[in-house]
Image (cartoon, rainbow, N blue to C red; front, side, top):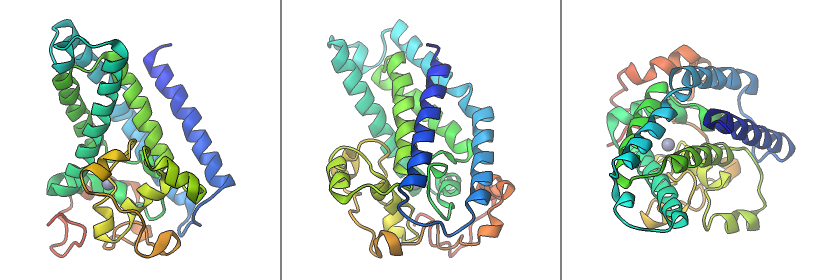
Amino acid sequence: MDNTLLRGTVFLIVFSAVAFSEIRWPRLSSHHSKKTRWQRNLGLIAIDVVVVYLWMPLTVVMVATRVHDHQLGILNQIPLPTPMVWLIALIWMDMVIYWQHRWFHQIGCLWRLHKVHHLDLDIDVSTGLRFHPAEILLSLLLKCAAVAFMGVPAQVVVVSEILINSAAMFNHGNIAIPAPLDRLLRHFLVTPDMHRIHHSVTVRETNSNYGFCLSWWDFLFHSYTEHPQKGHQGMQIGLSDYQSFARHTLVYLLKLPFIPPQPDDASAPK
Ligand SMILES: [Zn+2]
């Protein structure tokens, strides 16, 4: 199957499954109009698809192919069985996404782009896909560098994109997962309850739980928060200085990174 068709098919299946689960087993009730939120989120996602998603992932695949042709990158220097290469490459790409996400929180100019994702005042599957196009573009450039450095095979690039995208939709899902199952899954996967803490207005909680797919990185790099201080029902979503829902139009979201932040912006990296 063609890579774009494969990615699109998996995307539609996972998106529909998470959206259905949100209706069937919702975790939290919405505070704001879902219709208006989805109009804005889907608008931003449509721009992302046209501007970046449709053509840029192929660039990462092209980099992977060139790196392989010239036998560059770490994995091309070591004779390893193919399953081992795949495993290392997939884990490497997930760790890169963890650090990329952390840098987008810690570096001022990157935070201005990533803030657009965090402005959503409720969280569901549509939040997991709403990013400023410039953030996606920068993320793809970083992925190109990570693929070249490690010598990630082209097929792994495609599988990794599918896994990370699916994980983002799952862990932003407003799905009630029984606590024992959540605890079990958290040993290796970022669950919706774990990631929702990252969308808390409490800055200490926002700056934790950066993982997208594997939960290990937050344990390993000391950025794990187990529970929100106010509990899942009591926690507030979004950023404390950006709680005006009416203001968050699609045009505002696109312009936000270019609007200088207030000096007392509580969410800005210190
Ligand atoms: Zn974030």
